Structures are given as C-alpha cells and as structure tokens.
Image (cartoon, rainbow, N blue to C red):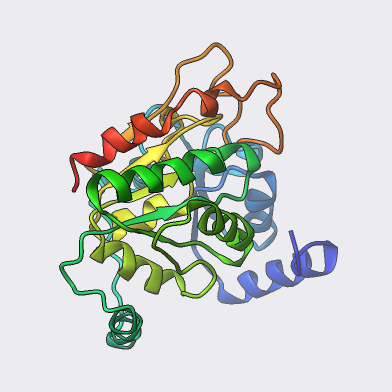
Length: 278
C-alpha cells in the first residue's frame, strides 16, 4: 500500500520470488494479488484457502473454516501435506538489551518488579474499533481511586494524540509510554503488568505472546472472525446489538450513526472485568 504499490514493485517481487525457485507456496492471505504473484513466479504447487479471490490460480484449495482462531485456521493449510496440527500459545522472546532498557525506565520511575499496575492500549488503526476516550479516562480514575492501581499507556506514534489526551484528562498519576517503545519493549511492559486492557488490535496478540491475560473490548468487529486472544483466561467484552458486527476491520465512522456497540460498554463494566486480574 506504500512503497511497494504499483506495477514496478509488483514485477520486482515476482522476479525476486522466481529467482528462489520455490517448489511450494503456502498462501494464508486470501487476496487475488498473493495468489497471482505465486502463479507468475512459476511456483508449481500453490496451496491456499477455497475462499481466496485468486482460488482459481491455486493448485490445491483448503476449506476456509469459520468460527476458529486464525492460528488454527492457518495451520489447517498444512492438511495439504497430510499434517494435522493444533496451535500453541505464541511466545515472544525479548532480548536482554530490551529488558535492561525497561529496567532503566522503571528505575527512573521508581517502579518495582512487583508493582501492581495495568497496561492500556487505547489505539487502533480503525476509528470505530477504539473504545470511547472518556471511557478510558473514567476507567483509569476508577482503578486509581478504588484500588490505587496506576495505568501505563502503550501504543505506536499514531496513537500519541489519543494517549496524550487521556493522560491530560485523567488528572491522576499515569505513565505514558506511547510512541517511546519498540514492539518487544511494549511486550515487556505488558508482561510486568497485571493485565492488558485493549481494543481489538495488535496489542492483544502482543500480550498473549508475552504471557499476559487480556481484557479486550470489541465494537464493530467480533471474536467470531478468529482474531480473539489465543488461549484461556482472557475476558471479551462485547455488546450484542442488531448491527454488530458490521465489518471485519471496523471503519472510520459508525454506519448507523449511533456507535452503541462501544457506547453501551460502560467504564464500570470494564473495571469489574479487570478486578479479577488484580
């Protein structure tokens, strides 16, 4: 969508893959482009899902299973080789350098390894996948006033405006790491916390890979699509209203113009869900 957009990069990718002389391509992505690249690169065996837009370019089509996690769904592609495999919890390894970096951050803030805090990831690439800003503000206040639990904000540089606004509106102690950490460093912060509170975003899967439980808030999307936190012990908060889910990714605006899928999830409900992890 950025530097590799257009016909020239497309041809370059095909040539690069063709030069490797692969025997087989396993294609989890269901786009026409993915299947076409493998076909034009001359890969003789091309395995993908039967729902792919380029399914007619595949040499073997595997049934696309609904209502299963994406990990298990993608592993089902191995059935083309006669392999039946169940997924395991992903593990993200953090380098000693990254751990030392977080140690230094925590030492400056006088935070101990056993500190009772939560991490919050309020951002998302899609506007409608974000729980209300005022919801996060109220939640942070509840955690501090009722349980003396501080909140640590994490996210990428795109989430800076949201995190800064939340920090400014809370008026209580809060640590804002947004835009200051790498993915693995963020994972290390999550690992040291009691729980991650997040929208349906990449932070959820970062937490799972860091061995931490998640309270995840769904709005326009649904865990039925297969992108829920893998494993057991997580909490999913979702409103079952007539128009939800409306999209696999969410969107810029609520199509029904009421945004009840998020507005109906109260700070008190999220707070009560978090309590069992503290």
